[in-house]
Image (cartoon, rainbow, N blue to C red; front, top):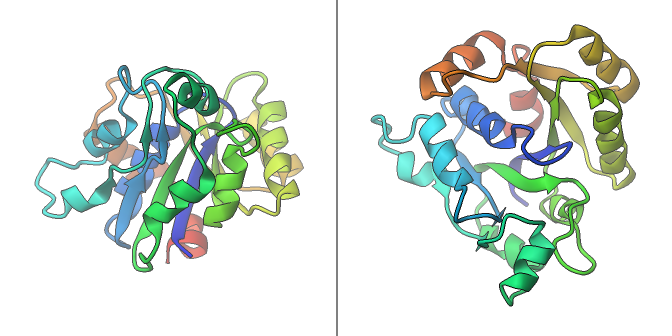
Length: 227
């Protein structure tokens, strides 16, 4: 089975791609990392693989940068749920077909970014949680820091644990909110491994400065998921 971290969110557009880039920047010196986005919808407007390559520093002198981005998988034009985007494109996504991309690679530590949240449907009966289960990777939850995040984050954690998926931690994105962080840690029995601001500008340099100072300072993600 592959090793690494699966990055999910409490919803769409919460910051999963930036968190994935932060993981690459934080741990690329410690382990042979590769980023993978198995399903990308709205591909005509967004390319998360290209954005991670940019934010994680690929293209700035890393000799191994081409290997850091595993640009295989399903790419669909409509910016909707994977099951609907596939249907509109006249195709069908299955967990099995996605997992086959990783067969035989036991050295790489994967940073896998999901599409939307845990229960987003992939086809008429499989969801993103089924892909997480098939890959058997610990899950890092990306959540907003604002009002409503306690409920959304705790529901996401509960959905993961009911499916026997291990929660690696939570990253909160937005204006730091220590009360929300403490509530998530207490009621979710999970560590918030970072409170990531909305970077302005969003550049490789701002990502690097933040990860060096603030992200997973205890190293729990490396010890528990990537080593």
